[in-house]
Image (cartoon, rainbow, N blue to C red; front, top):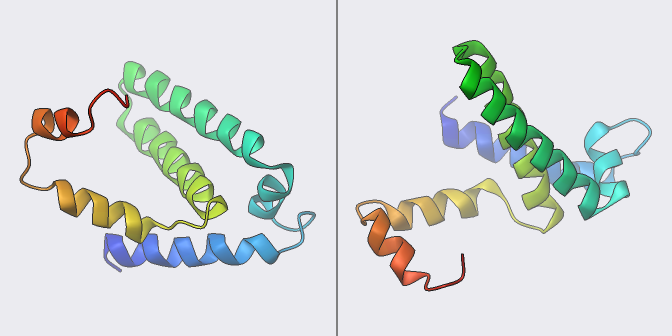
Length: 109
């Protein structure tokens, strides 16, 4: 399976979990708790990526990054978005200078 297929399959599963029983699905339980719970998990996972990177253990960096990506995909699905939209945005940016991209966003960030 290529990376886009994997992300697309995961995106579909996460969207389906919106209808799942929160008592039987971790993702459904996050959805039931609401956006703040999901954002908290994204923040926790981002911090864990930073800690893992500082530790320099490649396996731990991969593990924590997978957790961060997963919870970010949960956040996207919560908002009715999927990985295909993120891939499309990344493709739009390909070949464009990072400085140019940042300048095009103005003072939003």
